[in-house]
Length: 72
Image (tube, rainbow, N blue to C red):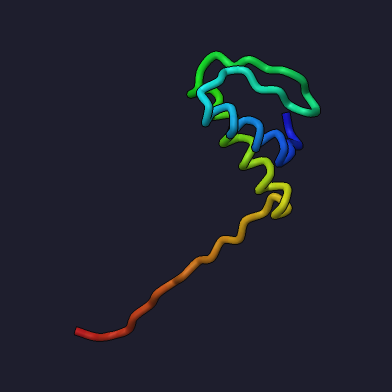
């Protein structure tokens, strides 16, 4: 699912912090996860989705080329 909200991220973080496997999301309802590991992976996906939406989905790459001249 794309388009996560900060509220969803906060709800998941709260559940992970308490050790609960069930999360009540305001927009999606109640979801029960299989493990805390699954919840942590979903949290990573959510945060990447939010960061991508905030940054337009583009990252800037810088290339540095070094040259030298000299003789033997």
